[in-house]
Image (cartoon, rainbow, N blue to C red; front, side, top):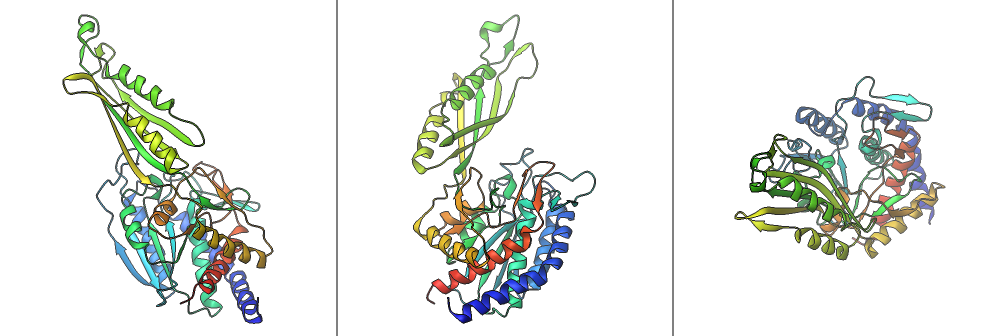
Length: 401
């Protein structure tokens, strides 16, 4: 490492330290600006908030509407389409442009009581780690680079509002925006030991619909065909296809029956499947499709619907090159940061499937995600922002314009 690079790194690190107190206040403001996945007005306010922050960095801002196609499939009430997608661009070096993807929706409904509660070195609140802390990691990193005089780094920030319900309304936009970037970074929370995420499973929504024949449960039971019984058989068979952690089947929402004295003629189940490799995915989906049987005149009629929303994210050679840049940056900060697998999925799956090598888990350190006691480590904000900023510089330097 030459003296110019050392001086540049020091300037960035010093800028992170100087800007961190203000960034922590913004982190709190964003957390207190609650934005549940199902509240479109709240999500719109959160998008407006981040647009102001990114415009302050000199970025051009574009708001794309939420896609109606397949929107809301992942939401419990079928209504969460998000509030659109914000795209912010800065810089003109499109040969080395980098992509940062954040989401503003949280799994939490409006929080009862205080939304930001500091408990020693931690803060508890809705989405403090997943991923409002990650949003501030990105903003702090970009501000520090600018403050340190790094003007020749080109970036795109994409902010979505339906990640927690499956990205059904934003995935087409992500897939279209990603190509042309040399690398992508997703500030989902780090793993418990601070590692970044370089591998994620594929994920799909599964629906099983069963049609039977209604009948009086006492007087005419022999003429009835129970959709609930057939559904239970199909769900049990689906569970037998699982082989965790390689193949996961979670049929979670079952509906059927109208009254206890009627043989039910309709029943349905919804669930999620995940797979670690494309081979596992093909095996799992073939097994699920084989559960379908019968037809409108051949009851019970079982229909299986599979909708993939996040392909497998693999640890490719291009991802390994990003990991080397990240670990070199970590060394400058006196950190040892690993890179591994997690069973969760994110927009990183979509971006990498579009051809852009991606490092995920670049956000704050925290835990209890999606719970009422979700927390983040306050001190990790500056640490992860510095790691992101120095990693971006190393990726840029490693690529010839």
